[in-house]
Image (cartoon, rainbow over all chains, first blue to last red):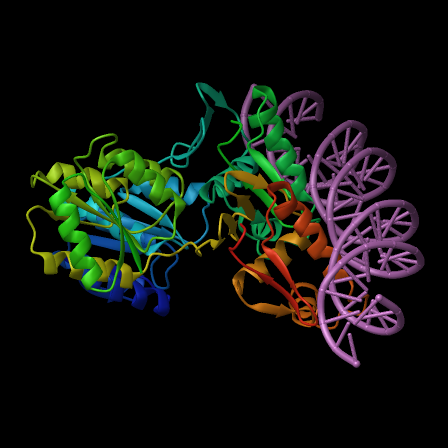
Length: 225
Length: 225
DNA sequence: GGTCCCGCTGAGCGGATGCTGAGAAGCGGG
DNA sequence: CCCGCTTCTCAGCATCCGCTCAGCGGGACC
């Protein structure tokens, strides 16, 4: 099984290539969108791993062009930040799955295998914590059967916490990932938004899924909810 | 390297255990899904060999539960028949590899080695001393099944001691590592915090895991815990 | 057995930390 | 053009934490 990896970060590309090779895949690497697209158009690949942020042509462009030319090779997108619109767009354009960096390597392999084996788009699993369910692609959150209405920022924060469910996530990390690496404002914003979240996802249901880890940050967990 | 084998066919389990042991693995065997899951949840295994057909809970269930609880130990599934859909489901659930019975023993060893070498540990192992368990990522401490609530400083101190479990750690080292290299205050602070720790992690359980090494510092050990 | 020093602990203070409400600025829809 | 929603700032407040200090008890060594 041949796999094409289109990724400009050399280290990551090399690591992925090495790992996939060890898993028995034949791997080609393209360092930018243009050559990546050329290779992909040649066909013969069982799957394509495609970074969104690329020099030359963006991952979006490559994917759009591929599908426009009737190439239906399964594509797994890699996104740097978990901006939900990126993902939604990519899926609309015909991506079959996606992963948010950084990702555990096994997950990449498992998803790739699933993609290749079935030849069927596997919908990325929703995030589940207790009876809290967040669907990144559909941009929805439910607690049990109740649909919750979150703003974009609240959603991004909750998604980030749920992706690391069980872990204590540092406030600085949340600030960097959910807001911006170079966010200049008041870091207190994290506390404010955690407050908003609690009022929406916990208080109405009398539970307490977001715990404060004093001196560190926050942790979301199934217990109590 | 510890390996957990969850397999109900006694002969097979015994053969696998013997063989792996001869290959240098430490092997635990669980004869059904329930006990297997319990063991696996305790962590500390480098890999799990998991039969799909099991009394108690099926291999699917065990795997699903494991992953749901954020346990990422590599799992190698064993299937009786070579129905590819079984395999597909298992891989989707987060299995890392599989073998179809009957399999040559050498293949099992090779695959296991590959699994372990590829190393998934993605999540830093938790620190274990007796029934004291500290999870740095989740920022949690348990004694047995009881969750302990430590402050940031207490946590840092305990983590440092546990990372060097069995060693006598100098007070000066603790001061430098847990506090600050250039800490200017009263060095007695270490004693104060060891006191806090003992009151939280030992006294309520009537044990004595933190020993004083007079003239040197402190040592944490399993004995009595 | 005595003496001395190390380690233990309780009280208490000052500051750090986290939560919340009020409200301003930006933005888009009607 | 106005209104409502969202995002973010700010300041007050309650709580918790980290640390100091001083006195006491017990182990080590002679």
